[in-house]
Amino acid sequence: MSSPLHYVAITATDGELIGYLWADATVVDLVHRSASSSRAYDAGTRWWRRADDARKRGLAPLGVLTLLSRESDVGPVTGARDLAAIEELARVVTPEDDRRLLDQLDRDNAGAWHELAEAFGALTDEDRDITWGGGQKQANGVYHVAFPLYSRPLKRAVAALSGVGAVTPEHRWVDSPMPQPSPDGRLSAADAVRAATTIVRGERFSDGTIAAAVQDGLLDAVVAALRAWYAQQAHPHHDERPLLMCRFCGGSPAADVSFRAHRGLVVLMGFKKADGPMCMTCGLAVYRAYTTHTLCVGWWSPLSLFVFAPLALVRNVLAVRRVKRLPAPGPGTLGPRYDPGVPVHRRPRAYVALVPALWLLLMVVTGLSGGV
Ligand SMILES: [Zn+2]
Image 1 (cartoon, protein in one colour):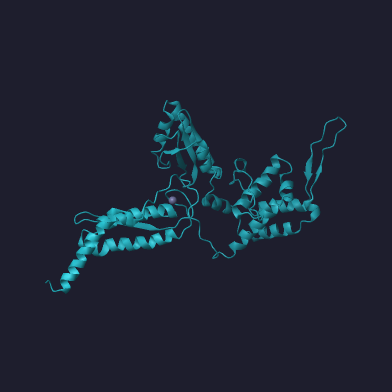
Image 2 (tube, rainbow, N blue to C red):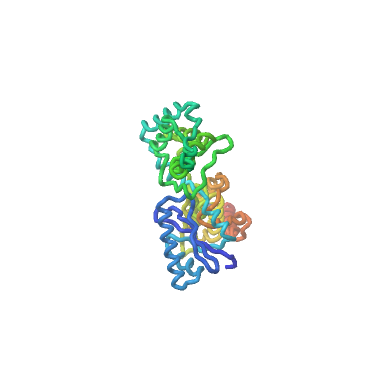
């Protein structure tokens, strides 16, 4: 272990990724995932306390990670270049994070969505041209603090965001940057929830957050994204497939596939199966390993030769076609990714399969020639 830093990924009991406990020569600390839920954040704090207790009992930092990594919710101890690399991992937003926020939207409250459309449609240029009150010098020489004067229609429109569920404690906005629309002014629906929450909650701590969002167009992008999401809910057959996460590395997209390996020795018959979801990289790695294994040791019993080995090979080929159709996966969140290595035809072990194939050919030829 030559890396200066090590970390373990910590998962909640419901499968949500909480964050990363890391250790160097002197310190054990936790990096929370910025997009995690409030519940995961609290759970992370409890994990940090356990690590801290173990450290205070005299365990070395790396020893703390090793100890905790024996638990089922903790991943293997992994090396990292530096703390920045772990922090980058913690900034990854998973499809699961997006889905959790979209679940906060009240898709069944048609009245609230109607109100959102109405209230924003009714805004005039005067409503959008926000003036500030206060700021003048008072008789005692003290300046009155300036505050934005929001019109009644604008307040109604902002309230409508809460009405559809777009302002939610599920988004920990204090720890996250304000989402930025793409160059063509668009936001994803989940980012619209993040932005709506930050704008509306932020106003309580910092006057003028709403005014800024009105002026730079962010609020309009939020409403457009939310309304597009709601319109899509009305046509659920339109691209509703949930985004899967690779079970090995946490990358997306992933396909739900199974790969099989068969060992057909006369006395020892064995079946091995790996179930998805898997991303393209990890899926290809599992395919190559399992297929090579089957080609090498899959043949050595009659039932294996004619049934199990061919079946496993055909099913693997069908499954790998689905994995290969996936685009390259986004950043992994669970840890390192499997290395697919070289293709099956470049693995010497695979050519053991030529032995039963040649034997079969020999049987056929001698059969046809009448055993001459
Ligand atoms: Zn993967």
